[in-house]
Image (tube, rainbow, N blue to C red):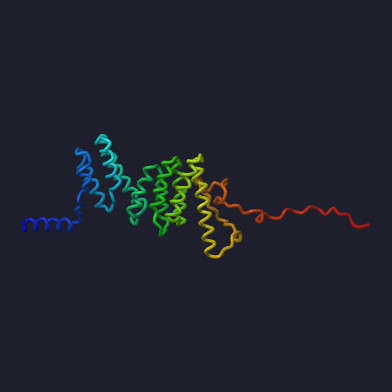
Length: 260
């Protein structure tokens, strides 16, 4: 027995030295996934783990498909697609993205967002994590918010360093508005503008800026097809400079007669 264990230990060490990682298959795959695709699902999951990715979403997909007695080949196709989306999300978000961010990013891609929005998060250089924003993005799309609107809004908010609590409250407010009859896209943009205004006011207060005394920005943030740049919305990126910013109207001629 001791000789056998020594041989096994030597083999494991040899694989490790050669750059391979030995990963034990998830017990749920072995016990619950359809036996006809069990080996294939386990191989895909192990491959992802060797790449540093968590295969939880595709395992859940395979388990759900098996419970619903789905076609094994259809389930396996879905598992492979999940693996592709996880790898794509990690590529777009960058190698420093957390597992939660990659999983949420894959869900967002599957919901239909533009890949460039994930690249914006990667290039944003923010110290905050984006998993909450990405999860909320996918959830809002499932509630009827257009993918372009949801992705632009949540990426903008994430890049402004919104906290998880703020993003969670935003999701609740948008959902409440949608359930109350407000169109999903309009509810999302209006609530996002309100949050951005509140965050801006909080930052100004922290540095001692009195509301209304700051000069308006001359740069602007409007971009084509950006729902956050809708000038018809209250508090949009263009801003309302107020009457004080208008030049004085020209005075008319003085028609008073000279005294007799």
